Amino acid sequence: MGQTISEKILAAHSKDKAVTQGNYILCNVDLALTNDITSPISIDVFDEIVGSSGKTVFDPGKIALIPDHFTPNKDIKSAQQAQKMREFAKKHHIQHYYEVGRCGIEHCFLPEQGIVLPGDLVIGADSHTCTYGALGAFSTGMGSTDIGVAMVLGEAWFKVPETIKFVYTGKLPKFVSGKDLILHTIGQVGVDGANYCAMEFCGEAIERLSMDGRLTMCNMAIEAGAKNGIVPPDEITRTYVDKRAKRAYKFFKSDPDATYKDTVTIDVSTLELQVAYPHLPSNARNISTAEAEHISVDQVVIGSCTNGRMEDLATAAQIFKGRHVHPDVRCIVIPGTQEIYLDAISQGYIEQFVRAGAIVSTPTCGPCLGGHMGILGKGEVAVSTTNRNFVGRMGHVESKIYLVGPAIAAATALKGYICGPGTVQKTS
Image 1 (tube, helix red, strand yellow):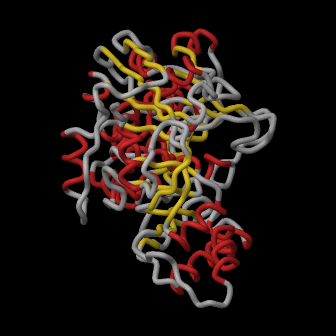
Image 2 (cartoon, one colour):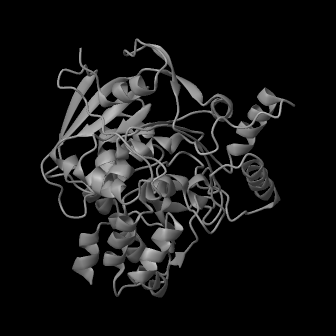
């Protein structure tokens, strides 16, 4: 019987012979990831296991420690968390530790630097570790305890997930992006519609989708309850990784006779830009619906591990060109990495944002998790390109978050209410 791409990657890393849906298996991992919030717990678990033995990590080249959530450190507690991670990295000669100013948001940075590659098995103490499925890797989030154990053993256990195949047909309309595809998909299946399943994204629309768009889609697979999201690698994948890879990689693809739990087909040819209303990513509605409601906003965030890449900034800059942020709106732009920041400077996007009245932050998760750089007060409304809009996610429990792609975010920042780029163009 044939296997899916997710099953094949797990089988390639497994110590068990029977890699079939529902089985529990033990696998070697290619990368174990933590950040400044989750590292301290993983480090404590590691230290508890090794005790006074002097044992070091299983492989200093297969662990990544990325300070990105509360960095640059916002207070003493966050500084101590980052300090603990920094000292552990130095003690164990961790190769993939990158100091503030030399990295960025983990899920933007690791693909950009070729640290994650097709065919890899990646685990991370961050739920959006599923991002790397865009490269044709099996990647999933785990608890900090699991990562601490993996740093000792280089192994993790998995229940082999069933796979749901999502087939996207047709050609994407102008400005409709990977963010709109995934918001619409989550709206169709619900926040638990893919619970502990692999979401396999394919079809002609995906084959034409950029790597930035694919990374956005896989990033939000967890918002449908998925174990992982994955895109079968192709020439777009190869073009992306060949200029970044510093080691060998392998393409895996699903067999024609692979078993799927379900197949969902979505025609994108008439898909509108999407807005996820509070307080769930599944509350996705068409932009035409939101525009009719004329929802005023206080803050717009363009960035995060979901939409802080160059394509996202380019879309926002295109809409911003020669225009100004609405006087009642705070607009925060956050490039995903230092390299993206530099590219945006060279393209003139950063100056454009600043002249329009937006603030540009150093790469950080910041406002996405209600950490810093844009906390919401009571009753405030935000439009954000981030991945979650739960109650209190960005600040006060009585604030509201609407999730969108960069096109709506930019247009909303200019007009002061939720709208698409067509509204901006009509009134310019």
